[in-house]
Length: 228
Image: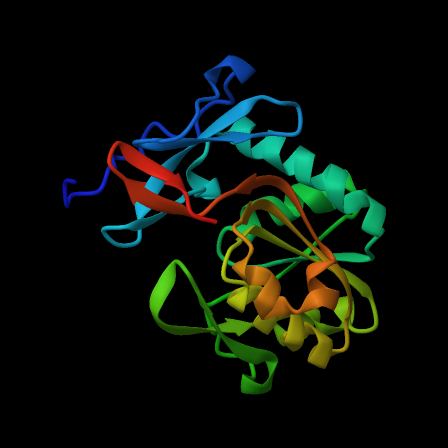
């Protein structure tokens, strides 16, 4: 088996939603065919974590505008039954989706969390987070003090692009509960594997909804196959 993983530049990925006929079976070499709720296909680039393991990637702020809008519409459909008072977007990529979801639900605004610490922020309105895409260390997640009254005591739906390890979501969930929110659920476009369920625990995991599922991948002779 070659030591170099099957990967390629991602410039042309996420630019169109493909017909159902574009679905292919494993092993996949460069792209994974994610099936959307309407049975069409969004091809995702495969990114190697190491020589033997990989994930399919969704960088929503690099997607075509109409693709982002369609994924946001799908996500709004699965979030709507939770009937949240407020949409809270997680950085960075959840912030591309949160305004679409909020507007679809008839909300005039949403509340963004961020990684940038403005000079008027306070340390108690922050928490440490880490994720599969930032393995080098933790980052701090901040809430603008001026936004606290918009979410305290409210039914909040967390929005992000994906859930994989569950570490970022779990830390964010804890943080928002400390602030005083009632978290009714979390909506993501991509559910990646199942490890996140252990990080969140059974009760929280039941409140997560998604648009499509994407497996974790393992290296085989001809490319990548499902490992979880």
